Length: 69
Image (cartoon, rainbow, N blue to C red; front, side, top):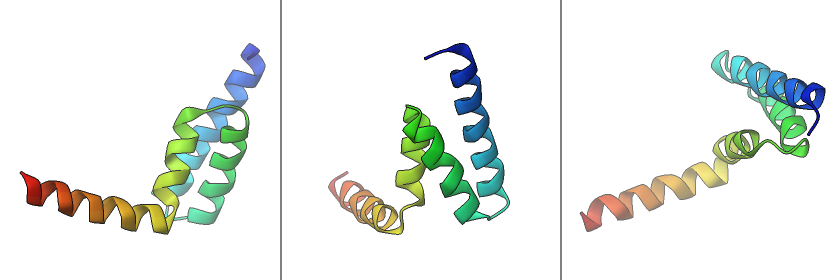
């Protein structure tokens, strides 16, 4: 990845985080999608967290893990 592409990718991730913090989920998702297409693993992780089905699955998994402790 060129330094310009890496910088742009990081900028999309940072802006996505700012959108997410301001509860602008759609805008955050758009920026994370762009960064993910550029190869950002962080952005891919954020997209998973923004997915309501994945969030529900994570909650259920956490309950199972807590029960097993």
